[in-house]
Length: 259
Image (tube, rainbow, N blue to C red):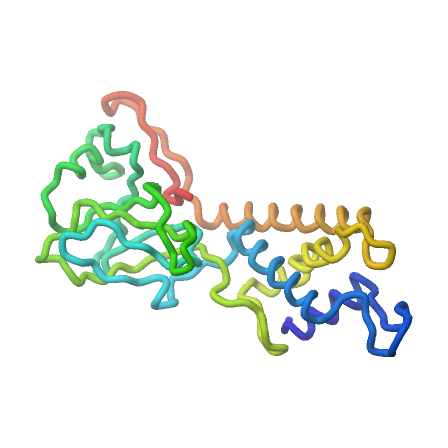
């Protein structure tokens, strides 16, 4: 649905906002188009963030970057919520995922494991693993909202300029501003996200516009929709948990998502 269609659905069918309900000219409404557009955009970004339903491996400036010599950290686009996987372009396998805590542990290497305890001691060379849990980076707006990716080991000059391809979960890259703009969310979620916009419109305590009871109903509906969408996304992105025994102690292999 376009922004224009979303505005009509929100105003007429959900908020029942008609000009004949307000004293004044025939064009008067309880909520302006600008206000409802703001609420729709807040609902749009919130749904994408909570439902994890925008997955991307194709937008160049978001899902690709090149390695630099003697550089270990790379700030990702602020729209990225989480990295699903990373791969050196042309390589047959993804880079292993490692977190900060992994680098003090040891697993006997086999077909399912790499030895993360050795990575921090490796000299600069070809990237073997990545992590995204160290700290948040600074964006151009000065906020701490961008994910920073670590590559292990640090890239040597020999491997500088290697293109890294990411699969990510992200927020929308831009707001809805023009009447013909379409949300990046799957079509099945367009109406569901409007529940949050309706909640924002009705949450105020106002004799004309406010309706706290209906606001809470819309809020509950939105939260239920995002929960179901998130569970569906997790089933698609997660790999089953694998347990291993007799490998120098009890060990586990995670799902590779690592929010």
